[in-house]
Image (cartoon, rainbow, N blue to C red; front, side, top):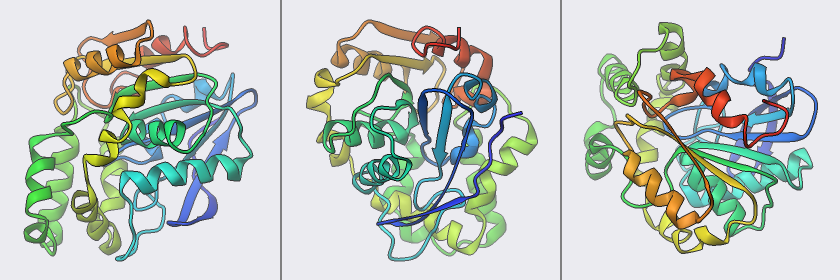
Length: 275
């Protein structure tokens, strides 16, 4: 059975990235967000891989990919790395599913770096200002105060932050896997480095370009997202100017783990072969 794994090491301009792929068929790339990793896709990969050759990776500074003190991992860099990964895989026009910061990452790759997509799904994405949660804003203003916290307090913060994105409980093993990359010494430093490098200008640069997306787009939104309200998804949909928008009632910020069957059903009318 096709499943999530991440064993391929790829050297990029932002450090070593770990990646994986599975299945046969047209190419499909998954772009995770913050503070997630490619593990966030593990519940839908088996079904996607029945119809597609699915590619995924942990962004630089995230998951099992390289993390180091002088590393830049802001969204401008992530857009460039997404383009590098498409080149590495030899993909010229894959379909793309993006979540959270993966939205801004892939929008920049498409609108600023010339990456072409066949079909495009944006799910509870960071794409418009203002970003994120109150906690995200607070830490961004006081990064130095959080760096160097005792490990048990840091763990509690990361776990509470992740659970705060959800409208539904997850299996404890899923939570453990999501939290784990941020608990090592380099992971903890990278966790707070993401807040320090966050800058809304990286979405401001692409917001005026949304109507010029060059492929069919569907926007999917967990209606009970505690971080990015449904109204933001509706506004994004209006700026893109295409027809497909679907709300997932009772679902929070992490639909692919909270409600994988609902996500697969929502994907079925935009990705051929899933229906």
